[in-house]
Length: 115
Image 1 (cartoon, rainbow, N blue to C red):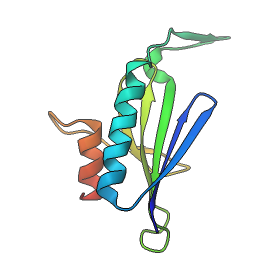
Image 2 (image 1 turned 180 degrees about the vertical axis):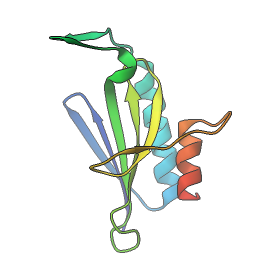
Image 3 (image 1 turned 90 degrees about the horizontal axis):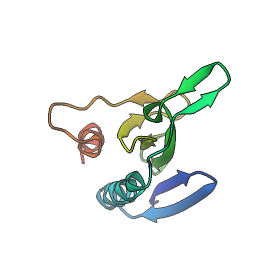
Image 4 (image 1 turned 120 degrees about the vertical axis):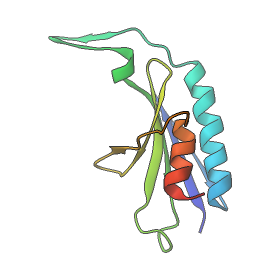
């Protein structure tokens, strides 16, 4: 069963399947870096609260594993409104994957997945 990559950016949703984890992570990083180039957004004022660009999710890229091999594995990267990226794991409760010194969010994702 393939690894599935889902890319959500605004109302657009794109899905692709990849035969192995390495190629799925490579595709996720390439798509995320391309989306980050067009991410800058102005602050959003929603009534009483103000959301800075770093607090807004511009795009979400989610990778799901083969269900029989890796039960309910969900990891991904959020591209923020300021163009930054944050790796996460989990589906309903997303846990940010902390990056180490000099490590990109994509490298942190690979480290967590041991790929």
